[in-house]
Image (cartoon, rainbow, N blue to C red; front, side, top):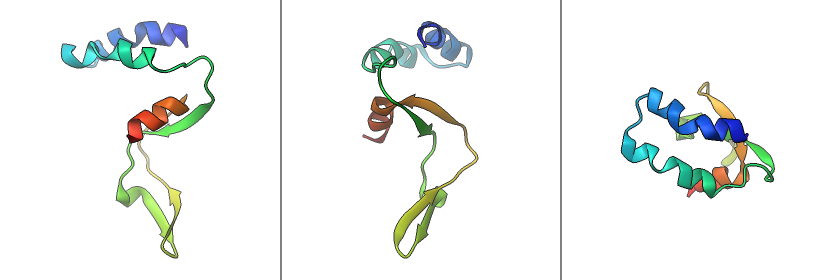
Length: 80
């Protein structure tokens, strides 16, 4: 995890992220204890068309976009 974290900014720079966004990455990563939190599945794109409903209740989530492993803090932060 530490190796991935160390390379994160440079990887995003190669993908064309602007400096304004790149400058925020270390602070965001510092705010998440990636070593000790329980890993969860993070879905990258939640839209109403990706939600399955049955009897008026949420019954599932599907999509073909990338998903990734992450911390529960990352999941909560993204949904805030």
